Amino acid sequence: MNDIGIGNRSRRLAAIGGFAALLCWFSGRAADDDEPRPPQGDEQQAAAIVKKADEIRFPLQGFEVLIKAKSVEGGQATEVREFRVWSKGNENTIVQTTAPASERGQILLMKGRDLWLFVPNVSQPVRLSLAQRLTGVVSNGDIARANFSGDYAAKLAGTEKIGEETYFVLDLTATERGVAYQRVKYWVRQNGFAPHKAEFYSLSDRLLKTCTYESYKQLGGRVRPTKLVMTDAVKADTVSTLEYEAMKLVDLPDKVFTKEYLKKVQ
Image (cartoon, rainbow, N blue to C red; front, side, top):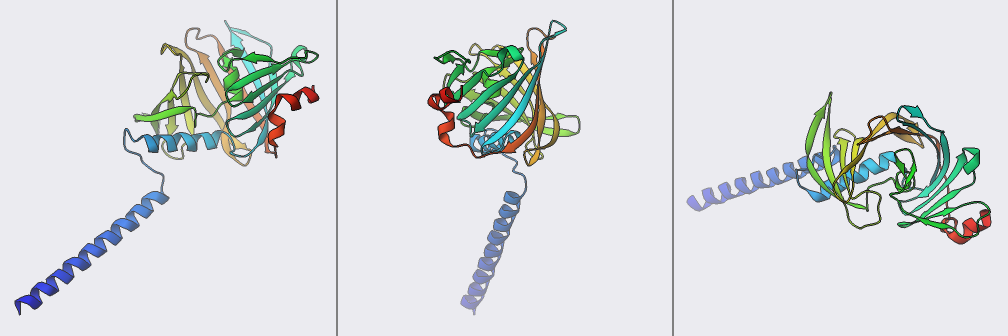
């Protein structure tokens, strides 16, 4: 009699345990289907947040986009510069200057972390740095290598409420030298992973500039920020704006991103 009672009780406990495990499994599945809420300090989740924000900024596939750069320095507007950009992943980018007329036809080629400048009627390309300024507050890397995934190790520093939205705050540290910035502090919206703001720091941990991601619109098949506003950390009256338009997905063979190919185009 007692043995039967113990057996029944064991079966009931096993059934309850099985139901609890099943419930936990379904709860986990539901959590996976919703937006993740990573615990503080979880580097894998931090990396996933950065990757999702990168995918909002630019397509994973090859694409073409037009960029207009406007700068104000010391309260005075400088000459507007325009670029046509072809990019594939975070390793291959071509930036062709289309305006002003005096610089039309100049081409930047990024291959990995190597960057070259091709100038019309000049036989040899010039090696450049990603950190070198292109115009105003904008560096070469801001145009040619704008994604953070792969270049930085990410850590979740916490969350911050700005207005009605809550943002993940991430600390990004460069994994190798050669990138434009040694460290980036990055705000990404908790609901949907849209990038909101970034602070860029030098090797000596000096704040160089602040960037905000604005004017979210349909671009290249999804809603993306179409305006980046960069403010110099030392000279607050020095501001550059990058405006993105006419983005489209294009097939870009690897041979396009070579010095030999671009020499033929020149």
